[in-house]
Length: 153
Image (cartoon, rainbow, N blue to C red; front, side):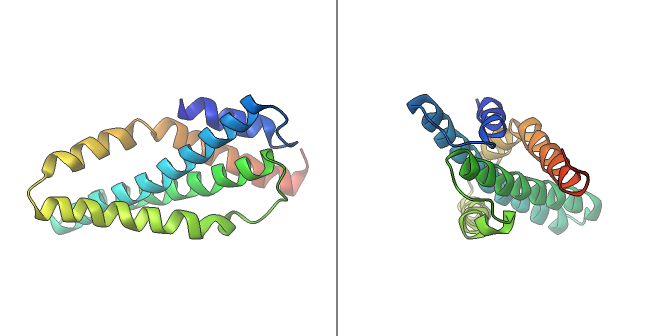
Protein backbone atom coordinates (compact mmCIF):
# COMPACT_ATOMS: atom_id res chain seq x y z
CA UNK A 1 0.00 0.00 0.00
CA UNK A 2 2.84 2.42 0.75
CA UNK A 3 4.24 1.88 -2.72
CA UNK A 4 0.91 2.73 -4.40
CA UNK A 5 0.56 5.93 -2.41
CA UNK A 6 4.13 6.86 -3.24
CA UNK A 7 3.63 6.30 -6.96
CA UNK A 8 0.37 8.23 -6.91
CA UNK A 9 2.03 11.18 -5.21
CA UNK A 10 4.56 11.21 -8.03
CA UNK A 11 1.85 11.09 -10.66
CA UNK A 12 -0.11 13.93 -9.11
CA UNK A 13 2.83 16.19 -8.42
CA UNK A 14 2.22 18.16 -11.61
CA UNK A 15 -1.28 19.29 -10.62
CA UNK A 16 -3.72 19.58 -7.74
CA UNK A 17 -5.99 16.75 -6.69
CA UNK A 18 -9.51 17.03 -7.99
CA UNK A 19 -11.38 14.00 -6.70
CA UNK A 20 -12.12 12.55 -3.30
CA UNK A 21 -10.18 9.46 -4.33
CA UNK A 22 -7.17 11.66 -5.15
CA UNK A 23 -7.41 13.34 -1.76
CA UNK A 24 -7.66 9.99 0.01
CA UNK A 25 -4.56 8.78 -1.79
CA UNK A 26 -2.70 11.97 -0.87
CA UNK A 27 -3.67 11.35 2.76
CA UNK A 28 -2.25 7.82 2.39
CA UNK A 29 0.97 9.29 0.95
CA UNK A 30 1.18 11.55 4.01
CA UNK A 31 0.73 8.53 6.29
CA UNK A 32 3.47 6.78 4.31
CA UNK A 33 5.75 9.77 4.88
CA UNK A 34 4.97 9.56 8.60
CA UNK A 35 5.86 5.86 8.55
CA UNK A 36 9.17 6.64 6.85
CA UNK A 37 9.84 9.23 9.58
CA UNK A 38 9.05 6.68 12.29
CA UNK A 39 11.28 4.12 10.60
CA UNK A 40 14.14 6.61 10.61
CA UNK A 41 13.97 6.46 14.41
CA UNK A 42 13.71 2.68 14.39
CA UNK A 43 16.91 2.49 12.34
CA UNK A 44 18.53 4.97 14.76
CA UNK A 45 17.65 2.58 17.59
CA UNK A 46 19.30 -0.32 15.81
CA UNK A 47 22.33 1.86 15.00
CA UNK A 48 22.74 2.65 18.70
CA UNK A 49 22.43 -1.04 19.59
CA UNK A 50 25.09 -1.97 17.03
CA UNK A 51 27.39 0.80 18.24
CA UNK A 52 26.96 -0.38 21.84
CA UNK A 53 27.87 -3.89 20.66
CA UNK A 54 31.09 -2.56 19.14
CA UNK A 55 29.93 -3.16 15.56
CA UNK A 56 30.74 0.20 13.94
CA UNK A 57 30.14 -0.82 10.32
CA UNK A 58 26.70 -2.22 11.17
CA UNK A 59 25.94 0.90 13.20
CA UNK A 60 26.85 3.09 10.24
CA UNK A 61 24.70 0.99 7.93
CA UNK A 62 21.68 1.44 10.21
CA UNK A 63 22.38 5.19 10.50
CA UNK A 64 22.41 5.37 6.73
CA UNK A 65 19.11 3.50 6.60
CA UNK A 66 17.69 6.02 9.06
CA UNK A 67 18.90 8.93 6.98
CA UNK A 68 17.40 7.28 3.92
CA UNK A 69 14.06 6.86 5.67
CA UNK A 70 14.12 10.52 6.68
CA UNK A 71 14.93 11.55 3.11
CA UNK A 72 12.05 9.42 1.82
CA UNK A 73 9.73 11.02 4.38
CA UNK A 74 10.73 14.54 3.33
CA UNK A 75 10.36 13.77 -0.36
CA UNK A 76 6.98 12.05 0.09
CA UNK A 77 5.64 14.96 2.17
CA UNK A 78 6.82 17.37 -0.55
CA UNK A 79 5.17 15.39 -3.34
CA UNK A 80 1.91 15.04 -1.42
CA UNK A 81 1.97 18.80 -0.81
CA UNK A 82 2.43 19.50 -4.52
CA UNK A 83 -0.27 16.99 -5.46
CA UNK A 84 -2.73 18.76 -3.17
CA UNK A 85 -2.08 22.06 -4.93
CA UNK A 86 0.65 23.42 -2.67
CA UNK A 87 3.53 25.50 -3.89
CA UNK A 88 7.00 23.98 -4.33
CA UNK A 89 9.21 24.20 -1.25
CA UNK A 90 12.57 22.82 -0.18
CA UNK A 91 12.44 19.29 1.19
CA UNK A 92 13.70 20.60 4.52
CA UNK A 93 10.41 22.45 4.98
CA UNK A 94 8.98 19.20 6.32
CA UNK A 95 11.71 18.61 8.92
CA UNK A 96 9.43 19.93 11.72
CA UNK A 97 7.04 17.08 10.88
CA UNK A 98 9.67 14.39 10.40
CA UNK A 99 12.27 15.02 13.10
CA UNK A 100 9.94 14.61 16.11
CA UNK A 101 8.59 11.31 14.77
CA UNK A 102 12.15 10.08 14.20
CA UNK A 103 13.21 11.04 17.72
CA UNK A 104 10.03 9.64 19.28
CA UNK A 105 10.45 6.23 17.64
CA UNK A 106 14.03 5.95 18.82
CA UNK A 107 13.09 6.97 22.36
CA UNK A 108 10.06 4.65 22.47
CA UNK A 109 12.16 1.65 21.50
CA UNK A 110 14.84 2.50 24.06
CA UNK A 111 12.15 2.83 26.73
CA UNK A 112 10.59 -0.49 25.71
CA UNK A 113 14.00 -2.15 25.93
CA UNK A 114 14.51 -0.73 29.43
CA UNK A 115 11.31 -2.54 30.39
CA UNK A 116 12.44 -5.79 28.80
CA UNK A 117 10.27 -5.55 25.69
CA UNK A 118 12.72 -6.82 23.07
CA UNK A 119 9.90 -8.05 20.85
CA UNK A 120 8.73 -4.50 20.13
CA UNK A 121 12.03 -3.64 18.46
CA UNK A 122 11.79 -6.81 16.40
CA UNK A 123 8.23 -6.00 15.30
CA UNK A 124 9.06 -2.40 14.44
CA UNK A 125 12.19 -3.51 12.60
CA UNK A 126 10.16 -5.93 10.48
CA UNK A 127 7.62 -3.21 9.69
CA UNK A 128 10.39 -0.88 8.58
CA UNK A 129 12.13 -3.62 6.64
CA UNK A 130 8.87 -3.93 4.71
CA UNK A 131 9.17 -0.23 3.81
CA UNK A 132 12.70 -0.48 2.39
CA UNK A 133 11.64 -0.98 -1.23
CA UNK A 134 9.36 2.04 -1.11
CA UNK A 135 12.05 3.98 0.74
CA UNK A 136 14.58 3.25 -1.98
CA UNK A 137 12.05 4.13 -4.66
CA UNK A 138 11.44 7.53 -3.03
CA UNK A 139 15.18 8.18 -2.85
CA UNK A 140 15.59 7.23 -6.50
CA UNK A 141 12.77 9.60 -7.49
CA UNK A 142 14.34 12.36 -5.43
CA UNK A 143 17.63 11.82 -7.23
CA UNK A 144 15.83 11.99 -10.56
CA UNK A 145 14.17 15.23 -9.43
CA UNK A 146 17.62 16.65 -8.74
CA UNK A 147 18.89 15.59 -12.17
CA UNK A 148 15.80 17.06 -13.83
CA UNK A 149 16.40 20.37 -12.05
CA UNK A 150 19.90 20.50 -13.47
CA UNK A 151 19.21 19.20 -16.95
CA UNK A 152 15.50 19.77 -17.53
CA UNK A 153 12.87 17.03 -17.68
